[in-house]
Amino acid sequence: MTGVLDGIRVLDLTQWLQGPVCAQYLADFGAEVIHVERPVTGDGARGVRSIKALAIGDWNQYFLVINRNKKSLAIDLKRPEGQELFYELVEKSDVFLSNFQPENLKSYGLTWEKLHEVNPRLVYATNTGYGHAREINRPSYDINVQALTGLMSRQGEPGEPPIYLGMGSGDTYGGLMSALGIMLALHQRRRTGRGQYLDASLYGAQLFMAAPTLQPFLASGNPRYSTQQSREQAGNPLWNRYQAKDKWVFLCLANTDENWSSLCESIERPELAEDARFETVAKRAEHKAELIALLDSILRGRSAQEWLDRWGAAGIAAGPIQSLKDVAEDPQAWENDYLLKVHCGEVNREVDIRGLPISLSKTPGSVESLGPELGQDTELILADILGIDWDRIGELKEQGVIP
Image (tube, rainbow, N blue to C red):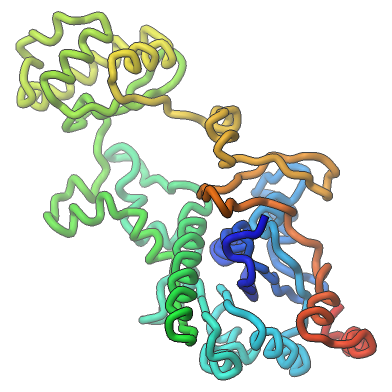
């Protein structure tokens, strides 16, 4: 089946997470993505198993999953011959994607001005830490950029340390924003015939992640949107986390008298609906700490599934707070292809991977292969795309331009 992006060629000069995962989204839906790497050492993520702090199992899931469905071109861009070959590829490509530092791209002769001159139709996409409008000379990792956005200071209980949302959350979201930007630029190119420069940054992506609380804070300046909020002092006790006998659940009800009455029936405490402390919206808010403590004591008496079954029958919105182990066993995730099984040549068996976050009825995405071996497609790319004969390919090998 032809992918929706069939015919789009992407030159993917990225490493680690945000850039590679952007290209991965494009490759999943049919784009020809050529992952450009250094000869010999390749993408730094190929060596991630040497980072002892990052447990990855017996196969390099970090590199192989985010570089799935891609080809690998190993070429020395420090050499003029390598740069000239790359310019020839640029002439025949649609997208250039990089998360390298601007000074590195300049040293390789890969600036927007140069590549736009080579191919005016090219979409030139960068992934930066903080955006291109103002240069900031500081590291841009997911965790330290997230620290700047207000996300961390909003998570956790008052008085406790801020909470990091998790490794790579901003990178993966930033990659999705970058892929969106590329699609928009390609759409514009259909109308004008001209490419353009775009940037998607970690800072911008994580500010967008913060939107549900960032926008209310911008509108009101109310600190409740920017500071940690205690679960035991939630303004609406019916919209809160509670611990059942075996796991936590999330109760999602507007604080109305009708909802309160339904909840009381479901927990077999109908008399609470008439309790003077909780009989109105205002009183439930006033006595929120007492009500939350009471619900805590009641809900600990049954398993999460028992409560969810009762609430489902009563039309009460609620859900379990899952662990990753729970998610890995959830048929909903597997049947929607959010999780997939693919063959991994590194260990010669099927492995579980994160799948496709978007479903298209006529042109669905797919995972045909995990990340390529270093330079495995170099010779075929030069021969098939650029028409270089095998004698010349041999010369390039002797010169060290390609491995």
